[in-house]
Image 1 (cartoon, rainbow, N blue to C red):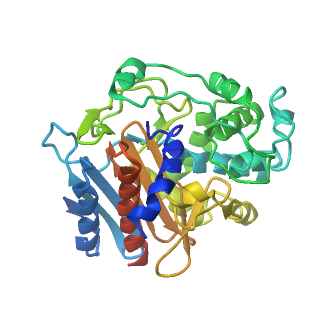
Image 2: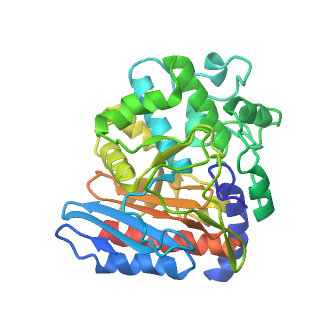
Length: 374
């Protein structure tokens, strides 16, 4: 199953079935990198070709890498390589939406149809942000190496993907349950464009990237190539074999490219109160429990408006949003005050089995937990 912004959650449902059986190179600034390096190496030991982790705390900034940039390369992981961030961009879209709410240009409890006539009069903007809309995703993707080769240059428009989903009845009445929905965020993308009268990424650039100086953040567009520097991307479709899936058009028509430094600055600024007024940041952190299927993957997780909260082993909770797209997996975490953060990017998706997906996630979570609790 393709671990993309679109399809990774579908594989997570299978993870729940096996959970009970399974579980009854560095730079530093005034900090000890050895525990972090150990955790990065542990991710690599699972079969991940290359790992980069960036941790920022009041004690300093640390970047470590483990493994190599490509299965057939001896080149080290680039310390600030570009990668497709997939669903991690949901947090950025949510920030733009909540900024528009603060400016009185958009209402959280307004119906989607007000902004996008002909869509739905049952779902609100808040439902979309919190994944409580009941929308049934019907989105394309590849599940084998052959399908990757056949489909890697396919271009899907936002309008096409929304139309596919809107043909299905809702899985539940809006606001009565929770289910991860990628189409919900495509609708939000369209709403932002309708309200601002400019392309979605232009709003991200003006409201987030520009003010924070994120010069390497950018739209994925329809190019199958990545900016330099970058590592190769790999996917495990079958146990014991990896396929290089670097060259592909992003399955997310509004996809974003970034580096770990970009995501570090973004999440620290967000939780530190630099991107939203206090009222909107508080609303963003009003979270609800995720589905039991996803809770097997993210234990005790709760979903706010474009943010996931998880319990810290040392007390309290941390925030972030993970993502997976075509061989790149991103795991993030930031403390509630924005003072400490951890971003992990992996150039391999161990997606052949639910066990592989779960083990990779938990190894990355251990790194994040150690970094934030140090």
